[in-house]
Image (cartoon, rainbow, N blue to C red; front, side):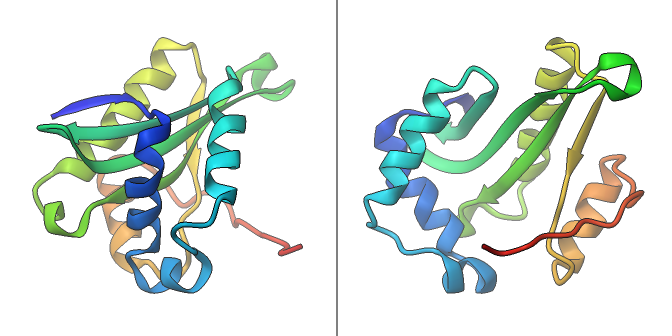
Length: 146
């Protein structure tokens, strides 16, 4: 298994993974051209890193890392992990852990002071997964849908 930067050809399998759960099924529309436009923006931004886990030429996992410079914490940079997904037929084999550990290592290599993420309040299994990897539920996340 290789973790690599996503390319345009990976967009369809990434979106399929995003849509393949109860929450994603309600908010994703596979095949919509908006995903390709979003990919172009992400790919052009040096502060964004969209990666895939590639096994034998097939996309089996994904996550996005955003690097945000800030004044707090002595002007440190933080990495935000988003949209961690593992293809349904690949779950339970440690791939998600490999992806997140890779993201932590990448953040460390880029000099980040911390790695942060949000996970939907209903994803109890995900909470246990992230806590097992050392994350703590130290803040309350809030969102405003526009």
